[in-house]
Image (cartoon, rainbow, N blue to C red):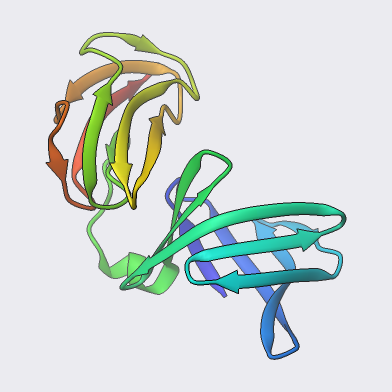
Length: 164
């Protein structure tokens, strides 16, 4: 399966069938290969529990059309089929989009502010959970397109950044 994530990283995931469920065998990320030990996992509604190599990871997953939203370890990742991504609109570099419909709980930066990679920029509520939108790189806040208590749709451009 080939996918492109919200950071435009290219993934090629090889799956294997275990007990009528698909398990990750290996992953290629930007031409670097990672081979996984045997995986056990359980799926209940939108929650996936993965046990691999003695480590347990729990993720909440929601799918809408060709896009998957994964909430894991305090981060929200979006994955879109590489084929459907080609047909979609181009994401402007430095624009951070809402990963899903939700409500803005807090805007933590202002226009002109210098930001660091990983810094929390805003908090939104979606799927009855709080999600921090963080800076993908160091730079400057160019524009803020949302405010506290505003409802936003998936894909809404929340903040525009300029990389230093």
